[in-house]
Image 1 (tube, rainbow, N blue to C red):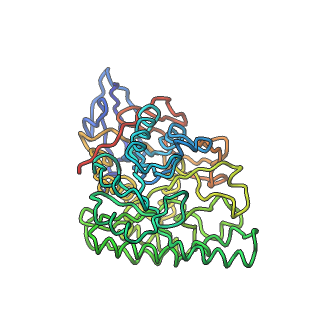
Image 2 (tube, one colour):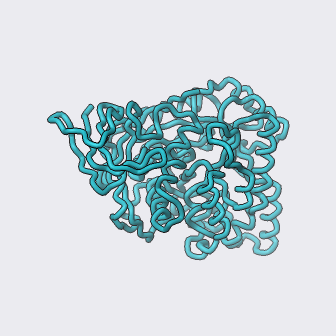
Image 3 (tube, one colour):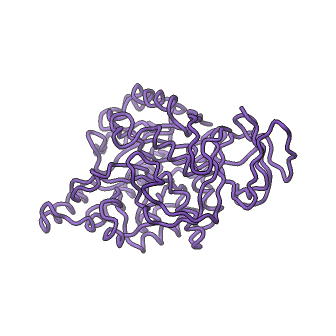
Length: 445
C-alpha cells in the first residue's frame, strides 16, 4: 500500500485542536508530529487550513441488504458514508430475512466483505423466541444485540416481559434498544384515526409516537437494566424528558447505561413537517424545538454519549404515499457530518465535542479495537474537512441509492475533501474511489 503524508492539518482529537503532520504507512498511522519530512515514496497531501478528524463510527444504520435492495445496498450506502466522513458503521437487523440467527449474521458479514467501502459490524436482533440463539453469540462476533421495544415488522417487537428480563440477565455485551411504548402508540393512533380516518396529517406523527411513548419505554428499559446489571444503550433519544434519565457524573467507561441521539432530531423540529412532510417521518418522531434544545444541552453536558444517524432509506415512491402508508426513516450518512459542523458554526456545540461523541465515544462504548482516534499505531481511518467551502445539497449530488435527501436545498459550509479507510484513500474531492477498503471490526472485549 502507498504511504501518504498529510501536511499541516488541524487535528481534532482527544479534546484539543492543533496543527500537525500525519504519516500513513499501509493500513495504520505511523507518525504524528509537528513536522515530518517528505520522501520520494510518499504521496503528499497539503491540508493547510483544513481539519483532520478520526473517521466517524456510526453505531446505527439500516443499509437494507439482504432483501430490501431496491432501497439500498451495503455497497451504495457505504459509498455515501465515506463521502460523508463515516468510516465505520454498525448495521441493524431488520432486513429480509431478519438478522435473528448467527447464520444470517454471518451471511451479512460475507456480503460486506466483498462490497463495503467502510468498516463494518452488525447487530443481532433479539425476539420473543430466539433467546437460545442470543446465548450462543460470542461477544466478540459482532457489535451487539438490538431490541425493538416499539413498533417494528414481523416478530422483531419484543413485548414479552419475561423474555425481556431473561435477555437483559443473560447477554454479556451491549444491548441497544429502540424505546417506544407500543400500547401508547396504538392508543394515540386510534384517537387520530377517529378524527381523520385514513387521512391523518403527518404533523400528527409526534403526537402519535409521543413524548410519553418514548419516556415510558426508555424509563422501563433503564429500570430493567439497573435491576439486572445489563449493559444498555438507548438508541435515538428524541425528547428532552428522556435526557433526565441519563447521568454525567462518571466517565463513559464506567457507565452501564448510555444514550445516543441522531442528527435529524438535532436539526429538524415539528414545524418542518409542513414543508418536508413524510420525508422527515422517523421513528421516534422529530418533536418540538424545546426537545431539540434539550438534546443539545444533554450532548454538551455528557448525559448523551453518542451522535449517530439511524440512516434508513426508502424510495421516493414509498415516502410519497399517505401518512399511514409511508414508511418511517430517511437517508443521512452522506450529510450528517456537514450538518453537525453547521451546528458548530452556529455555536450549538464545539468541533471537539462532535469528535468525542461521533468518533471516540462509539469506540469506547462498543470497545472497538484500534479505531476512533488519531493515534500512532491505530488504523488510518481519517477524514479531512474544509470548513469554508459552501455547497448546496441537491438530487444531483446525492449518492444514496434512493436518490433523495431530507437536506435538499440546504447550504452547508463544510465539506469532506478526503476520507481514508484503513489507510486507503476511499474518497477524494467528490469522488468515491471504487475500492472496497472496509474491514470487519474487531473488539477489545
